[in-house]
Length: 369
Image (cartoon, rainbow, N blue to C red; front, top):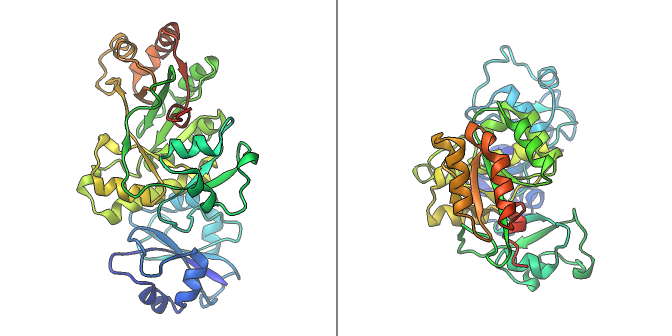
């Protein structure tokens, strides 16, 4: 059966969606593991099973509804297929002109990166040394809640790389600092513009045996997918930094969701990672946005130290600001494209180590043990 990939709009109900596409409410509920049919969120992406009513549609294929801002190149990145394969299946007179609302048939080999939404659930990849207790404390939940969300999970047999579900609290908070009882800091890099020095940054981190966290925006992923793959290949953690880097309190909650979901899809299909950390553009958020992010399975990460590298004050000032304000559990805000960061990073690392600091990803630094 063909499945349509649909972005929920304001005012939609499962009944209206099913009627619009000739499907049934039960078929949509089953395809998306929807627990409460009365709760669907604008901006979330769902699958709609439909009969093969589209001519020359391969059985079991996906149909994607073009969204504002989409191009064939973006769609090819989202679904891990070539533009040529998309053109072979669709009557598109001008590949440079596709319009929102147009339905595009995707080839059988397309990888659907959009996961059915389960509000309030994080898909967490177990790290070396993790225990159920550590994970529960890190996310402000309980061990029993994690066990309830993962039927059959043996808490004594957690293995690195295992993916588990974590239920997160409804009243979300933003995290500004990690564990104050461990002399560890986290280098974090926001990437929205520029590719001029990413490989050099990765080389410095590699030479110092440091794993960092990179918060990637959708537009950066679209422009530099090869760099995103390089970051993942080096073993660094990848977080979500929105799609177009907007002032999020100024956009609708539907658009907030869309910003997160589309960037998550790009991260998943380009890098293979399932992100659950989010850094808001400009550090701007409201409680409603925090709660919405939590419902999408995200923990909001701010920072302890703003290096101010985005002001280009000079490498020495960036280094001194970070080193002089370092404290256990510090989350350090840097920018992947800031030239002062590249020039000062090696010195920053050396001086922090001289003060006895170790380095970890955000997930490692916020761990309570």
